[in-house]
Length: 165
Image 1: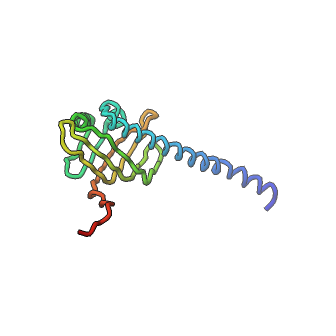
Image 2: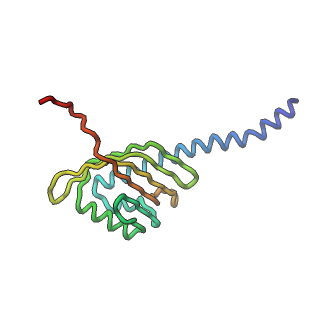
């Protein structure tokens, strides 16, 4: 290969290398932004802030929860969030993000959750755990939830040591 051919090959490859580098940096930044938005969503639930939670969902939101008819659109979502936050305090909501896949203006966040809900009118706390998949979309520079799926898992096995009686 002549020096001229090497130079032409290098000049032709530079834009591709630049796009690859910028693309992975952009995807990493988008992934971090989705995780940050997800944390804001969690904090809204812990603080009982319906408006903040609703501010992180898209107008074409669809929420899919086991055993519940699909929640479709902003009005049904507003009712769900307001009813839940009026009924329960949420002192613990922990997400374990196992995979965040970003492609353009969409991201898929997959993981598990643990939560404790305390009935405001008294009663035993409710502990829940399960899997989640959230599809985020960039809208006006902000990440918003457009699809949200929860799948409850059985209670975690007890870690208490067995006793012989």
